[in-house]
Length: 458
Image (cartoon, rainbow, N blue to C red; front, side, top):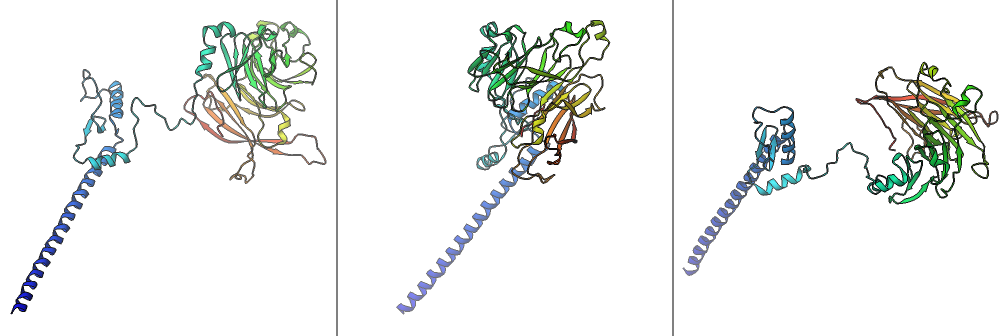
């Protein structure tokens, strides 16, 4: 009896325990199902709020909404917004152009995770970085403080032009050249106590390929070349000739009183220069090697333009000309046969002219101004070379490991890219002759506004 009763009691206890375990399991399952459904509902609500906020490109922060409200009220006031009401920042959350919509703070954890996934919108106090700003501009505060100060203007004159390489060269209205390094420290003052200080303001500057020499053109037509390490006297001096000599035979060169607007070095030589003045004339200058600036002789060749007449009344009847842009071909990191030709691109209001200066001056290419440019509009012009360089990966267009020389030039709002192809002469037959050059327009682009400067980034 006792053993049978114990078995009955034990069986009942086991049944009770099984029922309790089943009820507990069902409770956990129902609790998990309720929690999952609540989380799913909360996520669905947040997705709906996100879709509503992103619809129509609505701003996502109070700063963006506040700025939009100011712009909209200034341009076209809405009927819902009274002019007497002062706009204030909208509540935190998502907004719309007509008003704001705040998100109730009933799901803080999901709201914080959602906001972390959204892109950050800059506040009004932040400095925005537009996606098209690919160049970082550095303000030369120390240099500006020196050259624009009263003492700087009194001692050096006002800044007139600028050239940047490994050094920063600044020309002044007193005919001096100031050389700064990239720490904005003044390293040299060029021209003090020399003839250059008597030839008017510096109107053009260029730095040589090895960064050791600087050339400056002046308002009176003079050109001086200086070694930056030895600025006591000019390395080379090219004076203009007097205007009274125009009546008879006269040497080639700039006329006295014509300001030099463009200068440059040809290749790596310090004694090979090109220049252009405000009268629309361009020249190449090749100096012989000598012991000093006086001992050297300079051979000047006219590349473009006509000399002015000695009678001012006859000068008014001629079509005026000018040089809008002017640049010699710089050297790349791979040797090319055209490096010895001294190629120079000259952009006038009517033509693009590419000339070679050595061994003789010769026109290599001409291109007229596009007909799409308005004839009587305010005309701007600029150009920039990109030399041949060795590529890490061969070009997809030609399959060559070297990129071809390119020139980009602009008239007003029309930009054109020109590619230069070289065809070398047979070596045994014509060893010393320069290669044949072929110029092929590669692409053209029209801007909405006039292009005033162009430069290759890579």
